[in-house]
Length: 286
Image 1 (cartoon, rainbow, N blue to C red):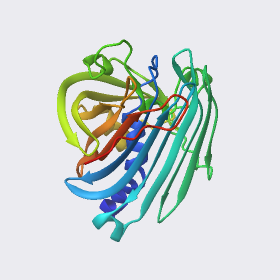
Image 2 (tube, rainbow, N blue to C red):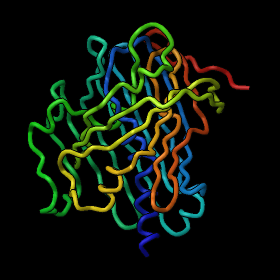
Image 3 (cartoon, rainbow, N blue to C red):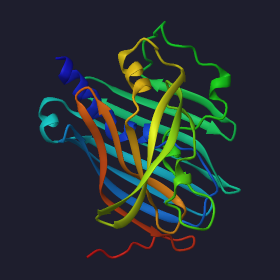
Image 4 (tube, rainbow, N blue to C red):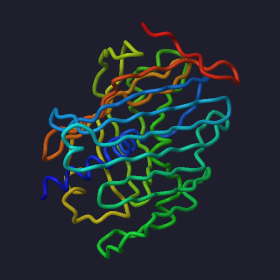
């Protein structure tokens, strides 16, 4: 039962929550406008366990990021799981300023919705429905922890300043402050290498960043999963460009787990510049 319970948690969270967790890299000056429509597959130890979609829209003065997914393959036979969520906000003086985030994750045992309201100073309010049971071992959150923090989905947009190539080592130069509704944590990034990939909609370079997880508050420091993530040094995020912008989005995420490597990888990554104040110009595929 322990393995099945772990798989349920992975099925319900990996497509939406893992993408959010590892992709939360903060905001930088935005250049131009674009749209991304991507499909992802989630595998655990090479076995397909989930599928999802991710749509990102960057306009002149606003942005949105929407994701959804669920369990598939063998896992869907023994445990159902699905999730959907998103973030939206404004672009002010070249900066992403989220104002609303929400995510709902459901399994065959329960459903939970997290909502976060934000302003330029950080998190202004948040809620979890149904209200979770209190854990006295959690490190208390304070107002200071929430200042300057971003929601996970907004952080999925990594913006590289400048005018040259955007797939560069500097994309990994961020150490974002993230609040996911429960835990306030930092993600510390480090450049590892440049890779070349080929997938429907995109063929070209991606930048690979290593990730380390540093929780500050809201977590139970005695939990095995927290200790495991803190000690983990093999997590990676692969970032690919959104056409028409200097924004990079996740192409691949790998997280080693006790059950094998968990991987979120794009099977389709179609992006295009937006027509000025109009719909995205979607390229034809062969």
